[in-house]
Length: 516
Image: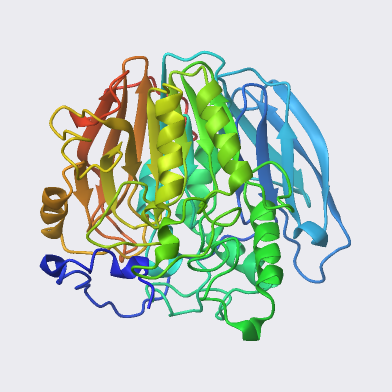
C-alpha cells in the first residue's frame, strides 16, 4: 500500500517508534460563531505594487435573495478620514454571495485599511499592504496544513499579532475534506459528511472562516496562497486519487467543485475555472515569489515502492507547460531572491521513498536543478509544506554522495529549502527521532517532527533568514504563545544553510486593535 504522510519515515528500522501519538477525546468548540451579514469576516490577498484583492461574504437570514449589493472603501488610516478608493459590488448565489474586489491605482509598499457596507451594516475593518517596487527588506510568515478538526489555530493567532510582516504565505491544505471524526476529533466538522459537492466545499470553507483566529489573521494581513491536496482530496494528482470513492461520482466533477469554492472563498485573482494557479508575485527588486502547483496541474500518479516508473526520464510533477514557465521565471528573474513557493518536500529523504514528494519524481527534480545550475541562477529559496514537520535543507544533486556534496562547506548545494510545520495537522514523530534523521541525512540542517508552528522568512540584500516558531498545544482553546525555536540563513551567493540567531527587529506597520 502506498505510504501516506501519516507514516512518514517508517521504513528505517531505527525509526520504528514513529507515530506514537497521544490519544485525545472529542471536544466541542465552545467558541460561539460570529453573526451578522459579515460573519465570515474580511480578507485580502495577491498584493501587487498598485493593487490588492479585497474579500468578504454577505449572509442574509432566511430565504436567499436573488442578489445582494453593497459598497467598499479603502483608506490609509483606520479612521477612514480620507477615503482613497471606493466602489460598489453585487453578489449572488452563483458565487456563494462572496465578494472579491481588485482594488487598483494604489501606492506601492503601503499599508491600507478597507471595509464593506451592505445589508445596513458595516463589516469589520481589514488591513492590507501592497507589494513594494523597491525594498531593503521583506518579511513573510509561512504556514501550511490547517486542519480545524485537529485543534485550534494558535499559530494564526500568533502571526496576527506580528506587526512586522508584509504578507502570509499559505502553502496549502487550508481546509481538510474528511468527514467529521475521520482525521481529527478535537473539533466538529461541518458538513459532517466527507466534502464532495460544491455545496459541501462551500460549507466547509464557511466553517473555517468563522474561526476567531482565522478571522483575525485575515483581518490583519494579506494572504498569498497556493493549494495542496486536501482542498480537493488526499493524495491528489492531475489524474485523480485512490482516496476518491467512485460512489461519489466522477472525480473531475469533484475537482471542478473544489476549485470553484476555493476561488470563491480565497482572496486570489481569477475564478480558477481552468485550474491554473501558478503565478509570480514580484516584491520589487528584492524577491520574486514563484508559486507552483505540484498537485493538480501536471502531477502524474504516485508510484509504488521499487516501481521502475518512478525513474522514467519524462516523469512530471509540474507538467511540461508549468515546468517550462517556472524555469523561465528562474532564468529571467532580476530579483535578489527567487522564492519558490510549492507544496511537497523537495529534499531527498531516502530512508523512506515517499513517492508523493519530489523523491517520487527524481527526473523532474534533476530538471529543476538543471534549470538552476545551467543558467547560473543564485539565491533560490524553496518553501514547502504538506508533511506536517519542519525540515531545513541544502538542495544538492545526490547529496549522499560525498563527491557531489559537502555538508560542512555546502559545496554542491544549488538552493535551500525551508519546510514549514503544520498549523494543527498531526505531527509524525516524537522529538528524539529528529536527531537520527539529521544524522542519516547531513544535508538536513534542522528537523523537528513533533511541533506545530510557522516559518518567519526574512529577506535582505545580504541573506535569507528562516526562523522557526512553535506552539506546544493545539488541543486547548487557551493555547500558549508561539516561541522561537531555531533559525538558519543562507548568505547571498552561497546557496547553503548555516545556523543563525533569532530574527532581527524590523520596522512595524500599523496593526488594527484587537476586536472587543
